[in-house]
Length: 454
Image 1 (cartoon, helix red, strand yellow):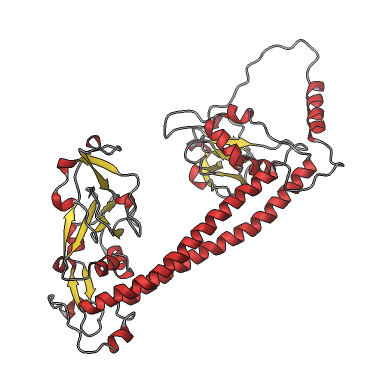
Image 2 (cartoon, one colour):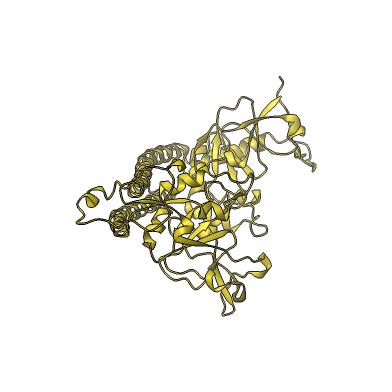
């Protein structure tokens, strides 16, 4: 019969409850981790553990489920511990740091052993107080989550604002009033006329469609093998920008260094050069571009391309084009590879770019920089607030497990008494005859587990 199976990708980050699983035939499951409804599934392998992947799976169609072997199931002790209290305790920053230090294995394959959890000391208040702590946590986190959601919505609105600005800029709408009030006649750029048969958007008077290769040159990246690169800088090695260094702006972290003789003079990145991801395993990353706003004493890798605009055009204008929806639309329509997505040289060189007169290019750059600087400031504020919200979340958890979040009630039955009762009950259940050592058989295969009847 089919069993609910929970792979690692269906375990969310720091999410209390989840109903996500897939049904798999028991015949296809050769290994896995047995769990029951309401168990906490804690990811034990890096980086899933460090990222906070854990949840409680609810509403299984069977009495138990099977999860990936890279999780540890944790179950509350009835009458002693509350599963939600345990869930939040495992998310608290001090506990995460302690357990991270106890992980074992090789780099990139570190795992948290069950023994590390068995030896974990847990501050256990009376069960009634655990319930009060959980209620308070959920109340505070509901408010905090709503605030974070609003911040993220504002980020999304800012991104849409940026794109609408760029779209208006490269369709001529942003500078319409400026153009109408311009004294004299704007001089069009000297580029080849494009036939109406090309079915391109109609442009304002004085604008031209031009191919990228008419106003810029495309340079391919430095080719090197992994064993020829280094992570450490030296006089004989040159830093290399790669696709992961391309966002809306270039970042200069996590660089690779290659022998200087492998980098040609034209491959050194200059101010206003545009770096493009020409190849990526993710389709949404291919074609991503960013402009350099400073000279860089280094080059760029083989999976990237560099567009170096002519000084006859406004180079900032060209860089902003490669951030615009007009450019992204052109990238998305290109026929790209099956597994690894690739842009060919001609895809960029033959791409059409709307080119206004030089004076209007400068005006567009000026207006975009003014508007986008306001958006940048708002974005920075949102980032600060999101980080503040995360620090507040960690502070709330710290207070919760140090007895400072809710008032204590002297009428609560101490947890120590409950634990003592459990020990006594276990002792009473022990057989009176002489004890002998036995080996406990632990299932090593799903097929050894007690499957429910159809």
